[in-house]
Length: 466
Image (cartoon, rainbow, N blue to C red):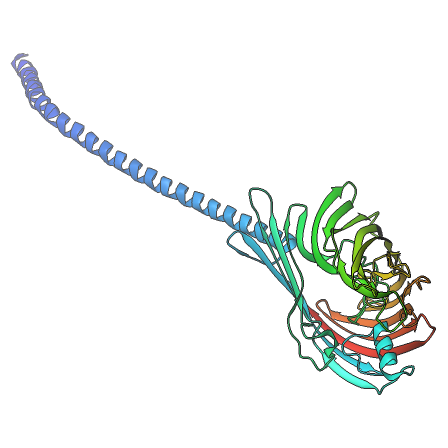
């Protein structure tokens, strides 16, 4: 058997192997740069994709943060709006909160005896008696007015030393008080003051005032009320457990003294001058014992001074008198819907504060030519009853007394001795800001000589509070 073909096959296979290797190696090396270049390009593209994804992620994250921030701002604004609605009404201008409130009140008054205008008090009975000389004189009269309409503007501004506030209140009794229904409404400032912390300065209710009596439609209010608006400098001490103490200096100006008018035999011709040398000092303690019961105790001290003119030489002799007053008032709400209120007050030289019948002189001239403080006192009692959800009735009675001095240097027969007022009303509130009502009023007036008079009216009112 020949061996040549086998060797040839082996040689051919070897040659083919060498040739394959010779060809494959260059091809392999030639392919390696291309593969490396492709991988580099892929890495670059991958980096770009990652950067794009990172950018999109950042955008989404920023958008989510903006959304969360806006939601938080909206929630905070809603909370502030809610707090504003609950705690602070009004609107803001810059850093100042402004609030405008008040009411529109329309009254129709039917007077049985005479034209009492928009008010009725013992002074009306006194004046009709003085003018006509008979009890309950005159013809019935019907009138209407909106003079009691009231506007109130308050502001609050936060500062580095505390909140600075202001308040101004006005009605439309600017025409002469006795103009009645004939005088048109005209603006009149009732109160105007500034506050800083616990301080108040300006025109406000006297610290000696007491409002523990029921709601009345009649503008006059009950007899014997402590009622005065004047310049005040007041500080309020906030005490524990719903207690407070007010102390104040107030304008002392009053109605002066009664004295001889020249028609009576007297060595004196009257008061040449009446002075108020120092401010009145007033205090008031309040205690809200519970949601249903509260009370106050108030006092005032005054220095009265006047020059008594002698008939012989026409010269004035200066004299002084000390005035004082005390007050106690309380309000008690019962589970039956009944509220009981009462005030008791009195003192000497407080004619400007206690309505008996509508203010009056603070003192008088004695037979010795001295000035003395005149005593006045009174009380008010109220029963207020909720009849139903929207119906309320009030019964308010007040009575006031004045001293009859036995050492006066003039005839005191025509001076006030005692007076009273009675009001009963029915109020209906169909919706919260709107109330209508009707009220009957009766007043009595008696002079020191025993002559008396009375007056009556019926009043219908519509009130819109805003």
